[in-house]
Length: 339
Ligand SMILES: [Zn+2]
Ligand SMILES: [Zn+2]
Image (tube, rainbow, N blue to C red):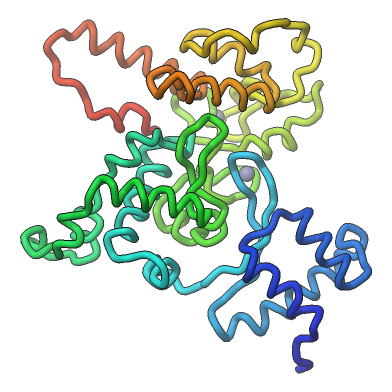
């Protein structure tokens, strides 16, 4: 087999030194290196990646593409295909830091529901002791936890959170919350499938940040970017592929026509009732502004954006709670979970 050429090495070197690259940058690099445009020379592009991967496979690395589920951008990156987080994060992060990352991961994909994000406060309150107990799997391991776990300080969590964001294992979402970073999307495909994260019915990838079918009885999830493709014909029926319930229009979908002139709407303070209605009609730039405003005003005014379904479900739930006075409050996370 012919060895890799300088062209292959250039691509690989760029991904290794710069980390995951957006598709546009990676394509530009490919064009600079080969003189061919990957959009027109799809075969050459995939042959080149295939050749690199054949060599990388011996070292348990893989060059792959994935989508950032929060904004639909495609990225290319090189990942370590050995399954455990220790070998991926171990060169830089300590045992308690890795335990914290695992706890955050679980909170984001499970407690975050189909929103795929948690607040910074919830992130810093993620426990790490149970992560180590699970790995250890013995009865009285709590008493034998290393002091690095039991003495892991709040300030160390803050530092780790910021490092994980810097290294793109985690990321700030446009709503100012904490979600998965592109490296987690690249790396954790098999982990998602092994942890029963519901898949998107269109692309079959885990639906971390996705829309849920409006029908309470149906568990179908679809990524927002997959929805756009699926329902791109405006006249076509917007039926759920699982139960045929009509799927509501999503924020950011092309709803020109309803999207009239709304001068000044972007200036109002983000409050819970109006956020739902107006956010559907906002374009990204405006939304980012509002997030900044909310952040400046302090965490209490930052309204987490939810799907109309989960907002409705919560309203119903709190109504039930109110009517059965004295009943204990269910755990907060259980309210947001839908499986
Ligand atoms: Zn999808
Ligand atoms: Zn459905």
